[in-house]
Image (cartoon, rainbow, N blue to C red; front, side, top):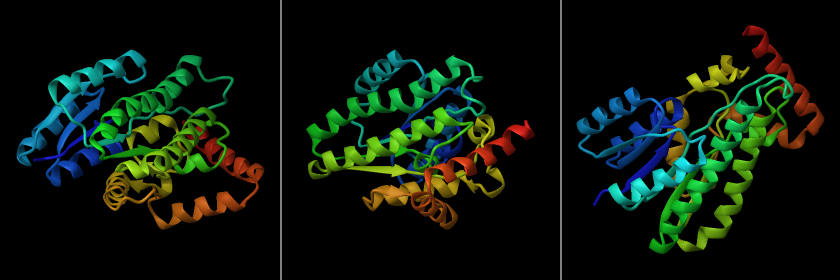
Length: 257
């Protein structure tokens, strides 16, 4: 019997590549995103791979949609074996100048929806005594992010939450993994105004790293040697220095807009 994977943010970037990787490895998929055309494109891909794709067009910035999505999945699909919390948004600029609704959307998508969906799905996994969860954070989780502060802070939450949850449930047959990509060539990164896209990895490379880490029951995936080095340096460098470096990178991105 095929296992079923729930992937949020499935219609672009890393989530899109995750969707294809799981289908290529004979998983049925539950795909959540805001782009119906891309969802249907992935549904067509599933037919070529002889797997089932359930598609749901939802805006995860609205908390009530999480409950609605969960109820639909329970009714129309059933058991979720693997949860990929990939959906995320971000904007750069000075904190006091970014529209409050945009900042609230970051918190709702990157923190609230991820946490709420995890809580709902995790209860079922605990009852089944098995399951896998992958939460997408960022290398930005390891440092402060001037000019992209709410996004970086949201990813720090994802990392801390995921590492804590992993310890809580590891003896119950459930594996929790954190994927911490650096700069990635995605439409999301362009919209967010991330300033380090010149050295970005492909979304496919990042998703492959996440998939292998999840299958091997490891705790954290930091894709790419350069990103691993940067995370190490951020751990041993003063926080004030890290903040200055990020600010310089983001200033560069803002100047290109």
